[in-house]
Image 1 (tube, rainbow, N blue to C red):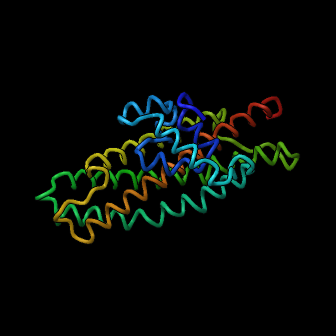
Image 2: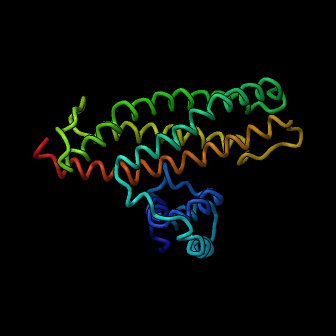
Image 3: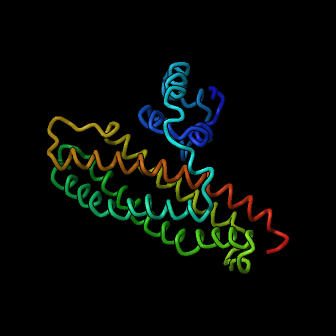
Length: 238
C-alpha cells in the first residue's frame, strides 16, 4: 500500500481500510479513482499519517468478495445492501420531511436535505429494480454458461457495458446527492437546538451514506469489472 494507490484499489485490496477512509471523509466509491495523496491533499490531511493508519487497519476484514462467485456477490448485494436501502429509506424520508417542517424556519437547509433524500429514494428504488430484474440475472447467466450450465443468457442490450455504465452513472448521482446532504448538515453535526428526531435523522443519513459507499464499491470495482471480463472472454460464443 502506498500514497499513489487509488482509493478504490486500497479498499479492494484491504477491506478493513474502508472504515478509516469513511471517518476521514475520503470517498472511495464515487471518487474512488483518486489516489490517496490527491484525496488527502483535497481534505488537508497529512498523507503519511493517513497511510500509517490504513496500514494498521488493513486485513481486519476478510477478502471475501474476491473469491466469491458472481452469483454469491449479487446475492450478497441484494440481501444485505438492497435490503438495507429498502428498509431504511421510508423511515429516513419521513424523518427528513418532518424535521424540515418543524425546524425549517431556523435551519433553511433542511428543505433541500428533504428534497435531496426524496430524489435519492426514488432513484434508488428504480435503480435496484433494474439491477435485480435485468443486470444481475444476466451476470449470473454468463457465469452459468461459462461453467457449461445452460444456454447463453438473453440480453436486451448489445453488451453488459451499456447497463453497467448506466448503473455507475446513477451511483454517481446518488453519491453526489448524499455528499451534498453531508455538506448541508456540516458533516451530520446536530445544532444546539436539535430535537431527538433531528439527531436521529442525522445518524440515519450518515449510516445510509456509509452503506452506499460500501455498496457502490462492491459493484463498481468488484462485480462490474468481473462481469465485463467474463463477457469479453465468452464473446465469441454469445
